[in-house]
Length: 125
Image 1 (spheres, rainbow, N blue to C red):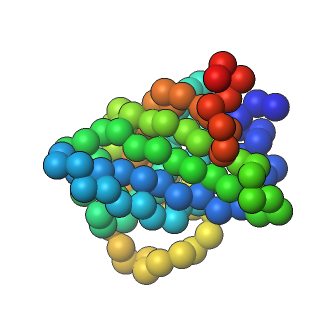
Image 2: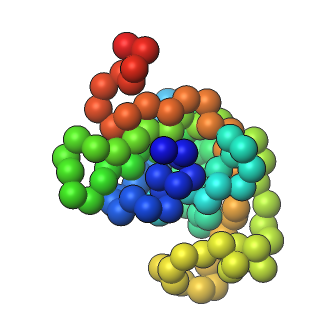
Image 3: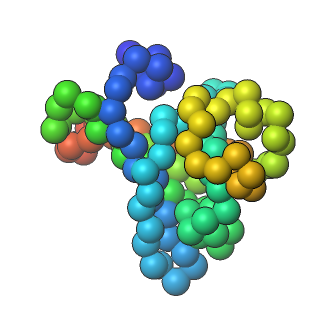
């Protein structure tokens, strides 16, 4: 199944993990990624710790656990490539209305470096 289709159909919970330039790690609950172009995903984020970390360290990992299983899901290893503040695009992409409406939000784009299942190293070992 294609990755974009997987995220359109799967229900579950996602966690985006980042680290600052000194290696201090943060993990935060995030909704499913927005697929922008081939191999490019984006997340909408407020200017909090996750966004702050990405200013000095572009690497992140997104873990998605399916709702009905403790072992099914996927992991995306990501590298930030750009970000923008386009209120109209962000409003169009938002799936829900979580958080304050007056919060400054960023659309952060990532290149997908690697995809692995939730558990295990994948087919290649």
